[in-house]
Image 1 (cartoon, rainbow, N blue to C red):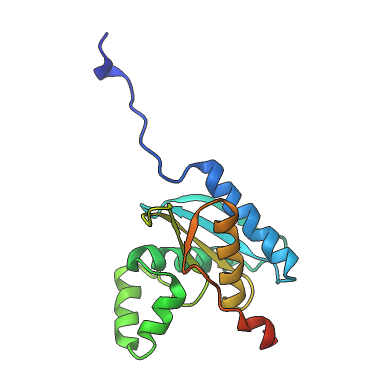
Image 2: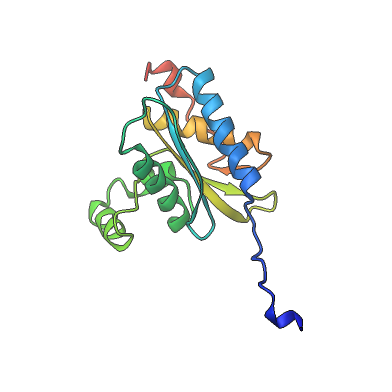
Length: 164
């Protein structure tokens, strides 16, 4: 029998082990910062869920919101905070993107791209459960803890000072 009859494995840029590290570190960062219960979704570069975890007490829509944040970041090639900032004066375009993505577009902080050291995007993480800036803080911490590069690279730090 030749090799043509054997199932071939797909190349994986964001292995399950890394996705699990991102999720666990994101949840740990949330606990350490005293955030409300979080839901975390990690997508591969094709937009497929690799890992999803919801902490006890996190609302029932949080998974869809977290996925929408990550999906929007992947679809636009920038973190969801940057999407919000760029599109705040363009509500019609935001609506068009939401329609084109079958509603999987949440343009608020908490969707962070996961990049290799060379800058190539290999996935995204979305977080929902607390104020959006806090969600983003936890997501960035999770990506960094997995040894990967987040986009955006730095969270908005003023959420601590603003009492969010």
